[in-house]
Image (cartoon, rainbow, N blue to C red; front, side):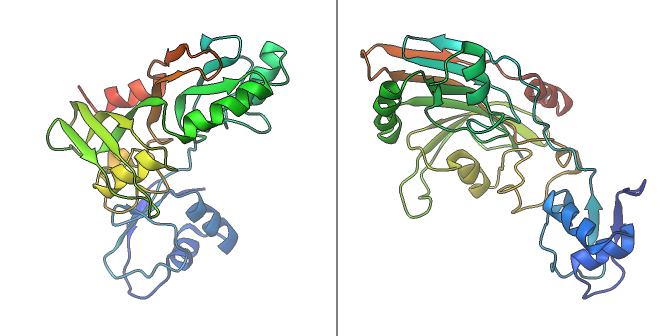
Length: 278
């Protein structure tokens, strides 16, 4: 159980974070480690999960109730576009693209097509446009389309802080390879803003890494959004606010263009309202 007050000042120097949590919250070492692994512990406003993070006198330690994005109970998934070879679906946040209990397996049952396969991946917490191949031939044909960056992808995100200017090109290499992300500010609030992002390259976690790299991490990003302190109201965002809003590409089967758009999900719109991003 977490205390009614979720923050405390450290009164000595040299104690490790895990040990401090054990003493303050009366937890076992395993439970304290589990809390750190849930990435709901902040030191001086920065998300911190290293068990041996050394504390100093006066540090502010905050713990927020774990509230992960739950895996939705899926029976059907919205289909945004369909051809005889492909489907583009609206993947909810909280479910995997493929594997057990994923969007892929739900679609297989929903459409009674055991050959459906996810043609690419979205992170569990990322919502929006996900392409499925309906047969093995279509799957093999679509792989080079994604690999060769022939897919136009647009994302929406809520990010910490207010980005200066209207548009920005980020071209910082990732893992030693070129990566290009174009961002456009759509609306701003006091502590966060709503952006659109278009990627020219498809590096792993590209948008999240690029935005964190310029000091404006995606809200709720527990992996990359850890480099700078965040205002208290941003600590409670349940999942990373990243949404694959549109997808467009030429079908490798017949050359016709496949395009789809996914509306912003309710939790995304709710956080915009709560943070007064207008």
